[in-house]
Length: 598
Image (tube, rainbow, N blue to C red; front, side):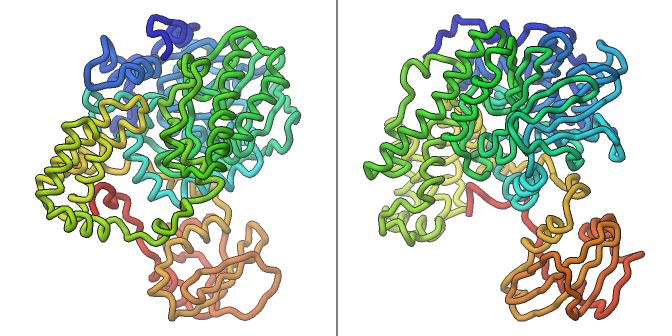
């Protein structure tokens, strides 16, 4: 364990302070609170309470430090205005914006704070470092929808921004309520942050498609007089991600590849499993390419690191961290151990564990090891007894019956909890809840056990998951805080059609056939759509094979039609009922589906 007396991180987190957000409450146009950093700053003051892991309390205090900071000459960050950081690089005639946060409101507030102290510089360019919503969602807070400024992003950015935030968006948002602690009060018995930052804002999300793709490491751009050298890092913290170097400022942007914690290899909200092997190698490549030419390294979360030796140490330890987890998991996997077994076996060597930034405030050794196993071997652990297990409710009924009923199951759960085995107590109480979801004693027992697990967790997202689960067992289900609907305007026709296709109720659609030709006049493209065998298939086509309906429209009209705005101004040739038939088979997702209950 690192030394709690070491205040280096606190010194670095305060270094270069110019001004605080004052007040630190950011509101939407209707007065609704979008983000409140003052709540964190005051709520995390003082000594660590008994209900929070001391290491996590320390990280929460660090991420609550907010304001406008000078990183180095000509580079500024606003931290603590959202889950992520927004960075401003001053250029010849304006300012380059890097990663404009989650919400337009928080991005606009950060830009206003910057301009209040650095002048009314116009935005000259926008850079998205990667395809996660906290790094692009607030773009309409810094530029208008019709902006002509260049927007740079790693290749395949739009593909992954949509797949990660729209296709499985409802499920991810619901699960994200757990790992973010949405609805929990900021208190010693509630949220203390997310490890990666204080919290996610809940404002207006948008997306403008990139106009410049970064396609190769070493690619350079000069943006309003600022020279930038890029390093592509696909498959690391995001499927599309990049670092970059500012040679004239001797500054290295590490996106979200190197932050002051162990990151996720698969997030608890759900995502594609990341590759720690290539992640480690790209960190090594960044050090090789830019380390000797950098006096400061900054990222899209947490605080910068100054000094070449300090940067080298940070990069080396982070490089070794992901490499160690990968290689040791593979070593033990090839000895026949399963992911859950390996997660109990691996501990970081003291040389890594003694550094604060390797600790699992956002990712964890436990669930990252399981992610590595999943990446290579999938969900099945090769034991045939686990190949076709009953789903949770059916399992619960059988376990509870075997244990002599709900009361006996709960008695055993409480006994394990009293003995300190909270993990098995949660499993038993969870079976009781799934077997008898209306049993108040079962819910109360499980909530009590989950609360104790949350209080002991060093990992912020584990704490949040435990405590949100406990809260929902008492009947408190918060509203989904953020929607990705504002991204639709940047989606391609294929992505818009996908968004409909993944909501088709297959069993209801199985007996229906239909075909549509879509002519997009402003794109000069034609797509064929067929409803067949319960699947809504679509693809671009150069053929004009007969279809039940031909639809001629613009991209904007397609957006409106998908959103339910109707067909005014849209040319329909053929059977008009085909559209209503298809749309009538669309299922509505449930943004509040149950998790800790059946």
